Length: 129
Image (cartoon, rainbow, N blue to C red; front, top):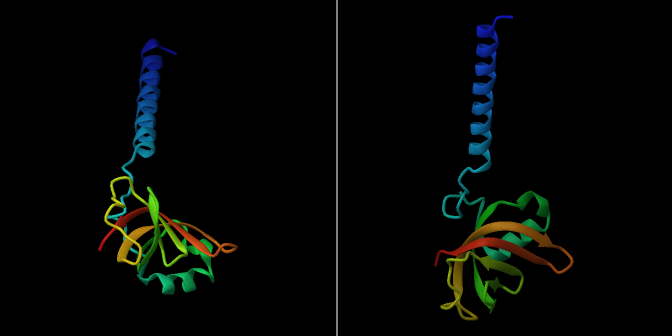
């Protein structure tokens, strides 16, 4: 094989390697989807959603929901709605203005339902109202 043919094959392989590395980088470091940009898969009251999720809890994992309910508990990183939905607030959301008994509307991502404790868990929660 001539040296020109060897060097052209080497350049083609190097170019393919660089293209593959760039594609892998873009895939691995793609922008994260925010709560605001996600379309809600369910909108309604927290009691209605609890009845709905009991039949097929795994189908709702990683889905965005908009729920209305009454605050029944607060801690430094989240709130509890209607005594059975724990909402882990996003870091930029404030718990300060939330008091027990206040009606709120939230949007968040379902991370799981504990059927033994009958508790739904949401994360990346933002306050809408």
